[in-house]
Length: 215
Ligand code: ADP
Ligand code: AMP
Image 1 (spheres, rainbow, N blue to C red):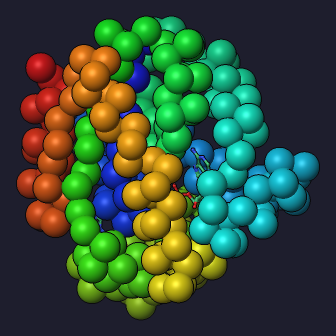
Image 2: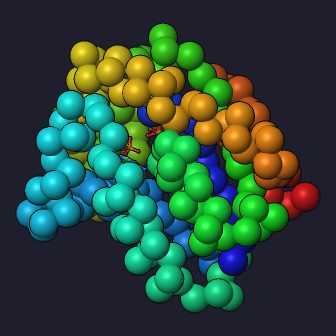
């Protein structure tokens, strides 16, 4: 199975670009570990209860929990999909090593959406999401058609609890300390990789991504 990893700090546009990739390549599968965890919190599952405390503080959920969640998802995916899009995983060197035991590195491509803290805060503080279909909006750059309701399903948009500014700063620190070091490993391993400045227009970024997917 081919895997496309969307890598970058919170707010770099991974979910937004994943949705554009899915529109263009409908026979892909999309896994966002953050979406799965939030769904589990909503349903009050055992996993949700374990994850809640970490997420509300902007900390990573422990690797063993996330790795076994990913393993379960991946083993249930049919091999004849175009590719699997991973958003928010791997997020630590341990998670990268775990993934490489499931998927050979030659079948992996990594897209790094690069952006700095100032832009991240601006992106996240104005982010709104649909709690029903997970569509992502921005109150300035990517507005819903009518006032704070979802264009797809008309549900009232919400702000994620962990999108408050003080937690975002913590999430960015966690990203720098625990997630960014993965990039060195990826480069050492010769995994196919592209770095894209993420402070550009959504469609311009998508065109770069699409060229990388095709080649
Ligand atoms: P991530 O999944 O990496 O956390 P999102 O895709 O949720 O990031 O994007 C974060 C916020 O930034 C959202 O409000 C989204 O609408 C907005 N956004 C995403 N990409 C861009 C872009 N290229 N330009 C402006 N705003 C963007
Ligand atoms: P995201 O939706 O990707 O911004 O993730 C929201 C939160 O979920 C993160 O701040 C973490 O607390 C948790 N999370 C998501 N993915 C992972 C992961 N791969 N490893 C650990 N924690 C994760």
